Image (cartoon, rainbow, N blue to C red; front, side, top):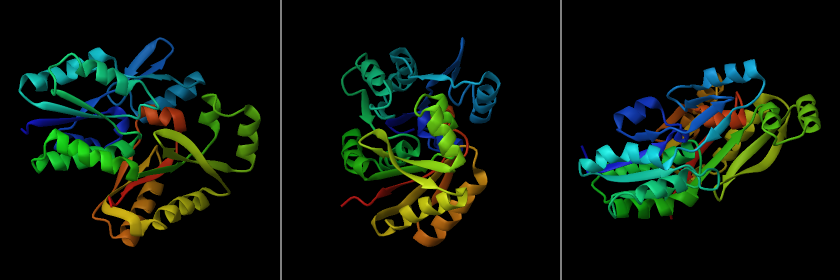
Length: 284
């Protein structure tokens, strides 16, 4: 067991097999329907989330882990003499980062380092995997944080939302926008910029057209890509994810193009069939 324990939260959307293989600690966020609260990825998984939304006709509320949750998760490893490096969901999107900072203050100086990914989903996961590999190579927490500071602005996160329904249910678009968007088959494209979810543009037409646009946007930057790892992350869009994975693998020469499933928190904001391509540009 290494002297550094890497933590992330459930919004990092890393494959469960990777989390187990690399011994990544995961702090779950919360998903609440009425008076029932679930831990993301522990008590509730994405297919069950969609079933509950269908039954209840409304979206859940999501919440950050409390400082106590972080303290409980970190303490056993600190007691073993390990240092904690926690890579959080963007501080622009959640109080998760701030709650981890509060928790870290309950331990000795240097025991817990909290790094703001300024991203979401596998935009966090890409940073986590860089940290895991750096720790395995014997780098210190300070060296890993220096690497992440350079890497963070190079993360490209872009995804297509298949339907405006969840944006409407979540109060992010009006009923008229939802109706018109559905009639015209408009699919919004979201990018993460400076830690925030930012509408980039809209694609009008078939889903195939949207997927090809997403793919071409990534391929247009392939000369700038760090070809170590590319993620195709999706919410119940397995066939489309496999299509994009194969195309990216063939046309970028990346060491690995991995698919991953979006968890409940990410899915509750975007809806089924949302799909994204996430990668890092090379550090200059």
